[in-house]
Length: 321
Image (tube, rainbow, N blue to C red; front, side, top):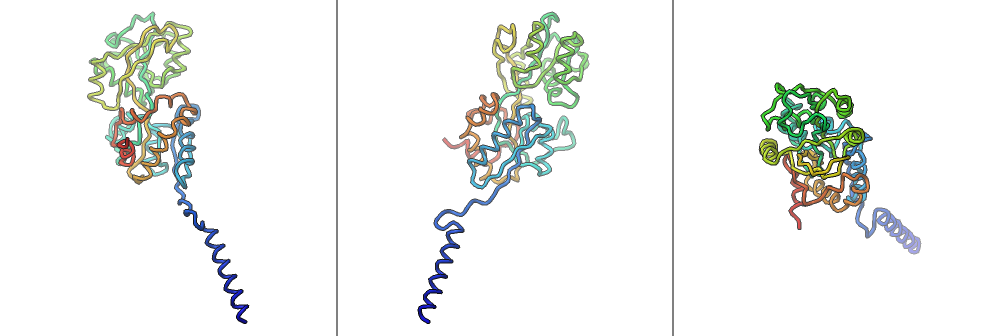
């Protein structure tokens, strides 16, 4: 009888040990799953491959993370998805984030509260394009000209209006044409417009296409005007479009840019914001492998052109040496 009791006791101890082992034993318990949805843009754009790379980085570097990237309508749509709680991180132009947070431009009367920035990533350059035969070489020459300012309600349209504004030019002074990039490129080639605003990472395929058939001129934004623009609209940054970016472009051209940024809301806890930011900057090789635009991403420029409040968790990472 005693032997049976001893055997039963031993079997119970073995079963208990197996149960403990099955739950991890001496190992740490697995991290709780954390789902992170990332809003990007169209599948043919830059945001989508970078979003896929970011989800891969997060899954491999944050314990328990289950991140996924989804194709969306890009910046304006992404603000709305964040606001609705349907995504946790979004790729958004910093000017669009500014408009949303301040209830201006396309978000007039529809202010979005609680937006926070994780990082600004790379420039999306406002390229002002004309043909040599127009004789235009300065924004001061735009008066009376046919100017493609971007699609109605787009970020490009706001960029065009704001840049001309610091030169003292309004739509009353020009024949504004609300055209998309593709439409503007075709109209420029056909002589139906004189100049076009294009907001995109450079080199831009549409402009490259024009430059193979025509002598393209990039109109500069003068340094003092760029400073005035940034003073009024803090989401802009200055840069140069390097010589030879386009065919027969022989000199550097000073320009301004908005920036692609990663945006969250104040619903993301500080530790997650810290972990996401750290994972991103510790794995830039993976981002660069996804798209050449990521070559411009660096911790040193992570808050350049930051147009909304920085998420506290991200700021903690930036404060570290």
